[in-house]
Image 1 (tube, rainbow, N blue to C red):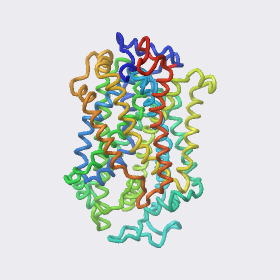
Image 2 (cartoon, one colour):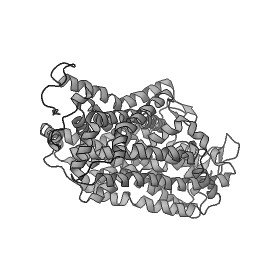
Image 3 (spheres, helix red, strand yellow):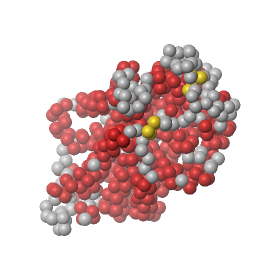
Image 4 (cartoon, rainbow, N blue to C red):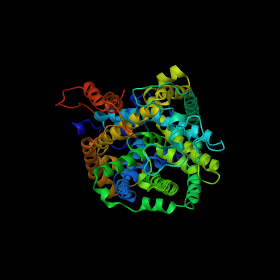
Length: 563
């Protein structure tokens, strides 16, 4: 049935593009001013806060260098082939994820809608992390740094400038700044608390910055990425040069690169490695697929694929050296082993690292540089996620949207405004719990389901033969045997195995020692279903519209009318 419902390839691009007549599409699709702009935008989209936060955290939790083994394996057999696949589909169809997936496999067109939904959900809470970065950036201009000592109104009697070995009751100055000054967090998700007006105003500022980056489409985005994609590397290298000279840095780097091989026996390590590849490169989120739809038809897809994926992973490893050298320094100052440092989720970059700054020479300078780097890393990943929503809606409802908003700039403003309002719960006192709940059920639960059905739709339903022919039409030669085998066998099998183990070993969301109550877990599953539900709904919609019975399949020509 899947194969029958997949669009007939015909004599080349004609069969797929024929569907464009049924779409409500703009008269002409803009392209990147220079191809390097797409490459930089792709690097900026892939290289984000996850490289500095999630990757080092997973290494820390998964035995240091042992995590690099499954991570690099997943990069070569999943990350690179699937990115190649997504860029090829986006560039060939010249459509966003919704219409691109509907073109290659109408029965699984819901996968495209799901990728838009998951990107929109992520952009809501991801911008909160940018809000935190701005808050810390503004706070870094104070002398001394507000998290440098315990002589502040928000500090508790248990506050200490450095952690005390063996003490479960003390908290560091940086922990208390994060919890009691910036977040003013409540004791659990059951206490909503009040709106944190400072964070709310900074959230509005963050969305203004996003809007200014994307309101002109690829023409404005292409200019912004020259700075946001390249400048973080200047800061990362400067931080690394500084950190390796600190006492204890060698111990931290050793922890990072020397594997604990026993950890590889844990399925969690392998699942986390695959999830990190998907989250970091953006497989299944539709961001790079949407961006590639603005490429010229004959752009070299393989070159962009290798550039984006390899630079992304090298950045993660570079960030690992930066973060773990700081871990070694903190271990030296506190007199405790590296494995006992309090590291959990976003606390890595907002608690542990600021604490390291407080003890460095010229602390304000390094703090400003670090949080400005986080801002740059967050911005280009964020506007890529927003662009997915904008591109998909413009592809589907261009004429209607132009009748309502008159100009695309006003439509983009409306998208940013709605996302900003939906992010308000994340800047309340309960915000950290809302953030953790959304991140767990979106970035961990939903993405694996999405990746599974995307691979089924493109690799098996549309077929490796058709996909290879598309690449040959664009670039003059078919993908080599490595990519064809990965598309046909390795990627589907690996993702299926990982999905099964993810379900079997699923763990409810938690924040530090706090485990979310059952009703909150239920809300989390609703968040996950907000994206996944579109896959069966899309299939039902396709079957409902097609003439004939299920056993007969579609009648007539293989070109599916998306209108």
